[in-house]
Length: 199
Image 1 (cartoon, one colour):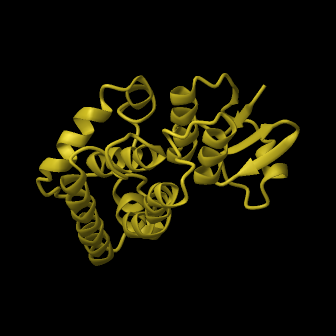
Image 2 (image 1 turned 90 degrees about the vertical axis):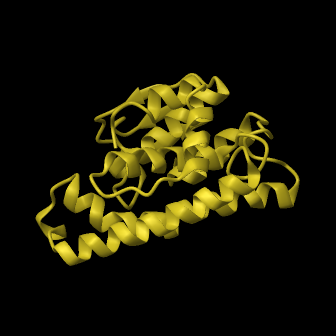
């Protein structure tokens, strides 16, 4: 059986848990297992073990699970359609994560290494700028991040949206994003792993 290592409060672990919910993939979950340290040289979660092999990097794991189960609704087989999904997944992992890190670590995690008020403000401003870009994308599609159909891009960015809302910064009004969040809220995986009060 698929084994998932990592605490369920981790945003990256929740990507994998939500993907499993969408697929209907059973798994064994070890929230506090120390085994990931031996399986991932970075010492980070999530790590999965499937068919005797370890895999890490949350977005890669989500793509692997969708591919293994032939879920071309979540990750299309056609190269350009697939790239449209992966583009937004990569944007989440690089641009968006870089923007929110200082504000989130300072305001939510309370880390003393992220206590500079000007740096927090700059991080929050960039975070809001990027969320405004996402809102424009959702206004253009009128549905989901990569187009008309729910995909892995909505999983990773749905969790990012939850983190943004949960962080005590000023949030601009983004109507397309609000409508998208309402669509996500019809999915059991979202309610369990994203809209669960955990940033």
